[in-house]
Image (tube, rainbow over all chains, first blue to last red):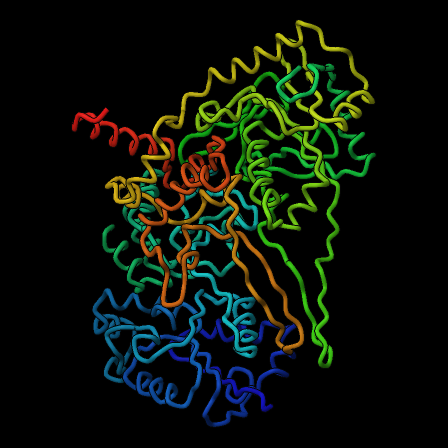
Length: 255
Length: 384
């Protein structure tokens, strides 16, 4: 049986999520043995044309050119997986969605007339059908390997959509919110990181975006009870997943 | 006879005697787990001696809040239940059920490698003994036995400690599960810090009695029993929260559309913390994993929760899409349907779901609110 052909393609992003694949180290040779890495510019200049069996898409869509490129990519891909906060929610660059992008371009670039960009940064799923999503800023390499293994075996990948709290409790960590009074986004954040920050006595930053069911309003009220200001709450929801609907709405409600 | 079914017998252990108990358990091949302070809470961990116990520490618990504090009597067990229950030592959060490898056309199944270690749990509270009894019933009391649980349970030695200082979140007395341990232990200790520092030790099993006889001790006097009774009475007097006893099961089962469910859902985060800290919640899900090379696979069981969307997923979608339905499912199963299923309540009154709810939702308040509104409505309609 021919090995499935894999492509790893980026749009507006920092490359950190693709690096998670190269970061697999111990498993990298097994991945390279199990799939044919047909197009992965970050790893090799030998870029082969499609079609691809699996394409990992990193980054958000910020230009008309990228939107067209993404649609073409969808047409030559069997299974399309968006990876990381940029591809799944628009990323930190989606902060432009709440501002005047023309003003930003004039402030940043010496020749604003050279810049041709969209007013918004949007996730891959806003443009094409997505088969699977890996959340996170960056993604978790364990989840990436789980997804690749599942696709190879033709089984459902284990990518739970519940809160980070579940992972925190599975790991036997002490709740930083209840025991330390530290505001934490864990109760509304999608699992997948293994409850990394609470494991280091920090509140969750929400980098995996909203969980399958969220009650950001109730959590924000609890944050206020712990002394967080309106601005703290606004900023907490305005990070890597600012444009995801539950986080966008909650940020708006606090200034 | 004592309530445990054993003749009322007791000995008094000094602090050295308690150390001798830990040493004797270790000498008999038990790993000893007990209360240890870590990360701002009193959890459970390995205990080599009494120096590992949280001496002179206590906790202040409220809905959605847990803080440690000092106490001036040097008590070793002067706090209530902590963030994690003993459940995680018997009913593991994540457990590999088997691994399988394909060699040619053959499949070779490997059972889990870990042999059940003899484990002594030191400092188990009365509510937690009740919780273990409930999980015994769930996991090994019926036709289908959870073999991993049963293997571990058969190797457990339980040293209970009677509560002297319950938290404000405790409500065991309204469920008859505490504060004093009545059954289900090998040895029960009552810490006596009334100007001395000793422990009244009661056997609850043959192995508990045999071990106590081996330890340096003195026979308990009437004064020692009275001191232990005073500890229990003091503890009971500190418990103010309660679950309604009358009409709870019917109120929950017969009012699935009660407006209060929506009211709770406005506060509930659906984060699943309550079910994960609950010492009786037993639901799990199964994940199948496969290796990249396609030759190895593993089946893994992990704690699940009725607050997770995937929990009620069937073909086409989740049955319980709303938090209202999930909270109702949890409370109704725990406090009502559990009676039909297992012959007991699923709640032991430990109060963990109250303290460790990041939104501070109190199930005693929610349950009382529903019962009260229904009985008020019945009165208004002239129904007795």
